[in-house]
Structures are given as structure tokens and as C-alpha cells.
Amino acid sequence: MKKIILIAFLIATQLLIAQTDGSLDTTFQLPNISNVNYMSTTAVFPDGKILVGGDNVVRKVESNGLLDNTFLAQQGQGGLVYDFEILPDAKILMVGNFANYNSVNVKGFVRLNTDGTVDNTLTGTDNYGLIYDIQSQSDGKIILAGELQKYRGTNNIRSIVRVDENGDIDATFSSGAGVAVQQNSEGLYYIEKVLVQEDGKIIIGGNFSRYNTINIGADIARLHPDGTLDTSFQTGTGFLGKVIDMALQPDGKILVVGTFTSYNGTQINRLALLNPDGSLDESFQIGTGASDVVNGIVLQSDGKIIIGGNFNNYNGNNRNKIVRLNNDGSLDSDFSIGYGFNGEVLSLNLQPDGKVLVTGYFSGYNNAVRYRIARLNASGTLDSEDFGMNTFNIYPNPTQDKLNFTEYLTKVEIFSVDGKKVLESNTTNQIDVSYLVNGLYLIKVQSENGRTYDSKFLKN
Image (cartoon, rainbow, N blue to C red; front, top):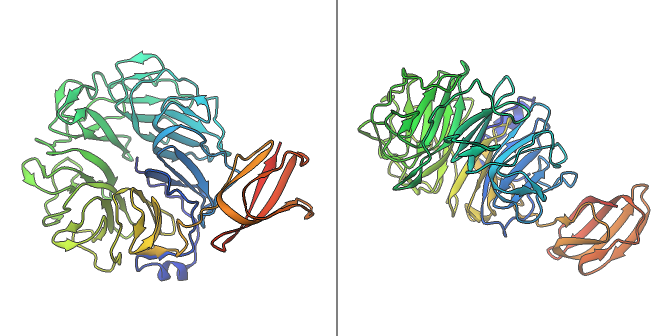
């Protein structure tokens, strides 16, 4: 459910300097999602556009947060999105708890074309069990992990499977009995997060204590590239509590967050740094750590660490749901969040320019209204006074007859592509465009709150 899609591109040095205080990025506006229970994940395209997903919602937005109406968004009851991955060709891998995408039967795993339509070359719908995480390898193979028990009719998957670019099971990856998907006191055993090291080894984290019938302590393990257990990764008794997210440092050490309160007998609250051999890095000092669950973690290029979750205190310091740490685990007081978030943070994502995308259950950040998603400057301040406040959207798009608006509008103007005005209307949230000639149209609207928006739609 948490992904860092880092794709390098050039940005001005002045911009980087101006955004090092953690303030809210005030250039970012996002379509209203106040009717969505939560947002769970984001991904960033090479051109700076952003994909957002959550509870029955998938949207693509411009870098400033305005809706990209060329992307066919999820309509109807799709389900929960847990994770995205953007491929080199800009196609999208998506996993979660959904049975369909825009009425196409896909059952928890789908590849979308760049315009949001389903890529039917990735076939297969006979799956069973939730898929929480997806990781593509450099060779194009794809790792799926979660509570997965059946994939394309093959039973006994045991939470993890690797497939090729067409979605066929990769027979060279053998997890054996894997993580046995069975009931325990917290529900099913499962894998929540996967990391692929540069040497091809695979780190898995979640809620489990055995891998392929071997006792491995609790909740974290490392596999060889062929799926067999790497027994050189020694975790002892492991974590007391589940692993939710992880991040790899350049030195091979592993940052881990979750619900846990100890590791191999050492008390450590919800954040730990492991050495490459699986032992605890005791130089990473977090004190009393986070007061409640940590759901997401990202590592900045300067080695500083941002974590988000449902905590309101970090090592005795009041911090609501998000905090930045120095690379030794100490609090970075330069990350200025004010009152922070008023609801749980579920995921974090770093943009190439250092800004931080945050999703979750919240409706506000530092007394500013932000529904389910916010973008912060690298300093912790909010990206935009209007971020999360742009409520305008049109649907369905394309349309044959009616065009609906998510806001009640005081003025609507529609223009042909050659600039001729073909319709003007006042005080409406729906208009009839059935009489228009098929083609692309530009639309200019003004909402009751005085905001004006430009968009486009296709009449067919």
C-alpha cells in the first residue's frame, strides 16, 4: 500500500532551497474526495502527474493537483486500492481488494494503459485473497504479495507469487509452503510489504512466523531470488507486532515500521533499523519511539526519515501523525508541521522534487482543510492553500447525453476546439449535451464559491 516512485528530473536549485522548511505546498489543488472514506496510495509519473487511489477511487491528476480528464477514472463500486507501480512505458500496475475495474473482471490485480483503460494483454481473473503489495523487478518480472491463496486457478500460493510480464506464474520462483495463510489471533498470516535488494534478494514483512515450514521468528524474512529462504538473515525472535512498511537505505540497512513494540527481545516502539544481516542497529536511537502505529516511511536523499501513522507523540514530543527524523533516529525539529494531521496517515510518497504526498483518513492539516490527501513541502508546511479544495469534476467523460458536475455551478460555457461558444448555462449541476456533434469540447465553469475551472470532455 506504500510506494516510493523516484524518477529523476531537473528542477531549479532555488525551488529546492525554498521548500526545505516542511511547509504545505500551496501550488497543489486536488479534486474533492471528501466523500471517500480514505486514500491509501499514490504514485508519480515521469512527467510529474500523480496517480491517487483508495476506497473505490482511482484518479490521475496534473502536477498541480487538477484532474487529468484524459484518464478514465474508476467509476462505480470497484473496491480498495492498496498499491500502484508505474512501469517504464507509463502503464500502471494496480493491486488491492477489488473484483473489477470499470466493469472489467480483474480480481485484485490489473494493468492499466496510460489512458486508464484496462490492458487486456494481462489476463487472468481466477484469484483468491487480498493483494497488498506489488514490486516489479529490473527484468520485468512482478512480485505479488498479501493474503493471496489462489492465482489464475493455481492453489496454495501461500501469500507470495512471482509472475512474468504477461501475468503468467514464474516457475523459477518457488516459495514452497511460503507464509501459511491461516487464522491467528490477529487474523490471517500475510505479507504486507516487499522490498527487492540490488542483488535480487527479496525482503518480506507482515504478520507471520514461518516461511516454507521454517520457524523464522516473527514478521520479517529475506528470500533468495528464487524464493527460497535466506538463512543468513538472522532475526532471532523477530518483532512483537506486525510489520507494515519498510525502506532500504543505500548502505543496505533496512528501516522497518509497524505495530511492534520489540525486536528480538529489545524494546523498540514501531520503528527499527536492521543491519543487512538482520540484527538490530542499536546506534539508531529512537527513545520511546512512536506512541501508536506507524503505517508509512520514506527516506529522503539526505538520509532523513519521514514516518506517518496514528501516533500523537514521538519520544516525548507531541507530533500528530507525521514526523521527520535525523538519520540517527532523533527528532528533526526543522520539519514544521504545526498541529499536524487530524486523522490517521496511511501512506507517504516522495516526489522527485522532495515534496511529500500524504494519504489517509484525515480531513485537515495544521488547521487547513485537506480531505484524505495533502502535499507537503520538504519543510513540512502545506503545499497549497487550495490543495484538496478543488471540488470540480465532470462525469461521465466521454458522454453521450448528460454531463454532471460535482459542484453546483453558477455558470457553464462550452466551446468547440476552434473557439466557438456552443452552449451557455447558469445555476446547474447537470447539462444536456446530446444535441452536440461528436467530438472534443472545452468547458469553462464558475462555482458557487467563486472558483473558475477549465476542463474538456469528449462527446460520442
